[in-house]
Length: 509
Image (cartoon, rainbow, N blue to C red; front, side, top):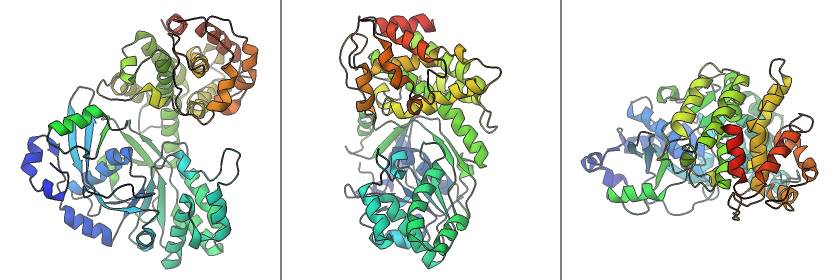
């Protein structure tokens, strides 16, 4: 079976295999969307297909919307052979699998190659929002030295007509809308990074201030919104076991699909000056900016992301290949339970719309232990140096600022820091070398542990420049009073083969 419009005409065949199909007139939706687009999305990757695109489909199915989404990518990778359809496979913790054909994408366009069509879309007064899942790096205009990237520098000098950088081309499209009709618009980052709307705004306004006159910049400030949002849904890369399941159903090899967990949260600041789809009817939260911030901090600083990082670091050291397997390890389970409930939860501000205790209960009892989710510690260990200051540093700051909490009572967050130092040695608990996951600071931080060997007590004075780096840990660990504890743990973790397990058990049992 080929996944395309023609194949879906045989609904009985698909439904007999348990697939939920689009329940709306897709041809009519495509026609209306192309003529009067309301939603353009950049970065149509796995999480978008599994979450936002499916949410839009639920509105279409219920008759709550008539237009779908236009999906934009940077460059065309291969010809579209599936009529913009995707199979979404939800892997539930109870073992049940839900399969759906997502058909809310009406059109696919490309930032490099479809400039004229994108300009048409931006100039259409019907456009209500442009959303993004392009990763945090997608908004960056500078290199590691803080200097403008070459294409950004060239765009700033050349002007909007010659723009070639991602954010430069987007600003040029906004400029086209301003010149055409000056209609309002929401630019909505849905990426998994703090205060994401501000990152998008900063990138756009950098170009606008250089290029635009007072009128364009005033329009951006007054008529274009950059809402904050918080997104949470674990969506690993397509897994071979899911691909085999689809082929067993009779689908052609190579059918586009995405596999994801059942839980999902998207909380958006309700600031849409040209209107928006009623996505609250598809389970998406709309609220004020302060509440978005509280939800984001709850997730990123306590209830999910720190637990993932702890499991990633120790999972790699202990040779695990899947996150769910780690939750069957009592030491690792105790590690994340203590970090979450005992060390993190006391400093969480309740956002009101999602209860922190309920959130972390679901994370630790349903989401992470899900044996059907093919997520790996190696994937989550990527960019750890960029994650530590937010995922753990903010909790330490809260303890230091509190009159009731004592930072010295933090036992296992420092153990994660020590575990990361041990991870940087790129040798597992059995003494076997492994390849650390990609990290922009790997070449800078690994030299601090390069001279250490298992079974030889390390001189931890050499770690002082690293442990005092607040950009990595969120605080200077010496000033916070935690460096000595981290160094002591590190000595135990490097005592020899099996020392990681022994140390972990000692402090979590």
